[in-house]
Image 1 (cartoon, rainbow over the protein chains, first blue to last red):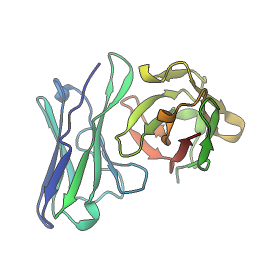
Image 2: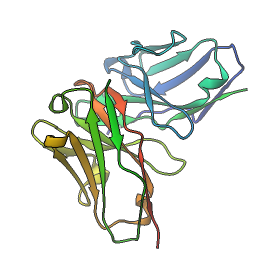
Image 3: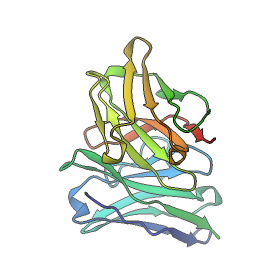
Length: 108
Length: 119
């Protein structure tokens, strides 16, 4: 089955740029979605289809997908961005959803 | 606006069953499948499967075959997750999420239901 690999943690100072990666074989051929889960809350979609930002999500959130790595990019990081972030794809060969293991973003 | 409201926390003993509900509002219920996602304490998100809200047909992830049942009551726009023969390792928060499109964009989530399995 398809596997998505995320770093367990990423740390960044306020105002800087955070990059959270999601690795998978030929992931560039798949549509990657990203979810933010604030402590004690349900996940929220922040990026869909690699780069699309749903209504209400700040422009500071963006995404890219190339080769074997998709990346969630958060510019001008704020304390309120401290959360767990998950990537997700639809594996068309198995018709199953696959989540990455999640990355805890710490704002220093 | 799209809203998914789940039932409250549950405490069960090992071997018992639990049924969680997920009530949808703000959109046409039958037009979008619903996924179920499990999150064990301190762990990541785990996709359990989904249910076609038009046909009632379920798809299960491999780890969730056998003791898990997805069902619907379309008259009240509600999906259900039934877990039989509960084990301690079923202790988790269970989320329902709307499947927006064929690439499984989960665009709206319920607030989650905590199920605790303890003697």
